[in-house]
Image 1 (cartoon, chains in turn brown, yellow):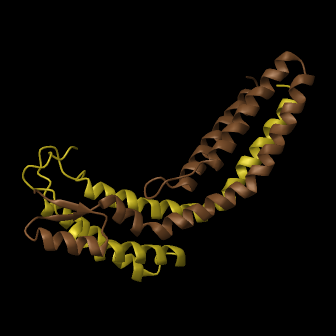
Image 2: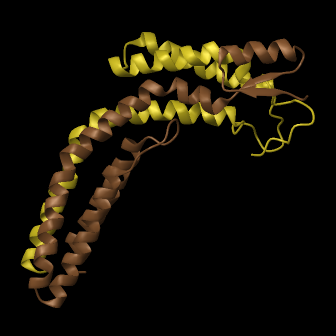
Image 3: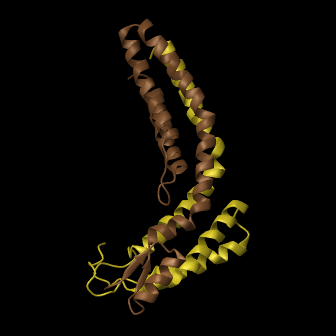
Amino acid sequence: MLGTITDAQESELEAVEHLWPKVPHQVCQFHVLRDASAPAFEANRNVKTTLRKHLQRKVREVRKQLKRDIPKVPEADAEQLSVLDDYALGALTAINRDGTAPFDFAAVQAVEDLDEIADSLQRLEKKGQW
Amino acid sequence: MSRVGAQKLARLQTIVRERLGWAEQLAQIKRMHQWVLAVEYILNGDFAQAGEAVTNETVGQSLDVWRQTHATQLTEGQLSKLEQACLAHFLQTLANQRLHLVQCYESRGLPPHEQ
């Protein structure tokens, strides 16, 4: 027996310390970080949910309009609108992704993704063509 | 760019720009996320130079320095109430588990630590 590892349940700690008192006992660092960051992760989840609720309906509406317009416009214009639909889909994906505690905070990643989308849209606007 | 394309582009930009309304809340979330990443960095032993041994002592020392530094932030009054509450919980959990959190870095026979 080289060592033991548990998820830091007190009963488990007592059991392994009783069984192997001279063996080093390590608590699972993943579990400790997840427990330690639980309130922060919850705050992150709340922000992401608020962001999603605020933006989702608007982006979906744009997609709906794009789907409606694409068959009605000339092919070159339809291609442009399809590109914009890809951006809208990217925005929806960003605000709908779920994080995983303790390392993946969805709100942080969602906004980084939206930042990239905003930058790319700006480049598109400056270029004026696809 | 077609007229309708320009309109839809402008609309998308307006919607995406609305994320900036959460800038302050997101800044707090990012700072709190950094606590997790910073402690993971320490527990991984990533602070050690190439060839430098990662031991219970070196990891423990780095962790304790981090804890002390952030404990002072709790009393400096620069954190929001949310950050204060979350940091207090974060530090308390680390303190509760500190004894068993850094135990197996130099146990003989375990697979070597990979950096």
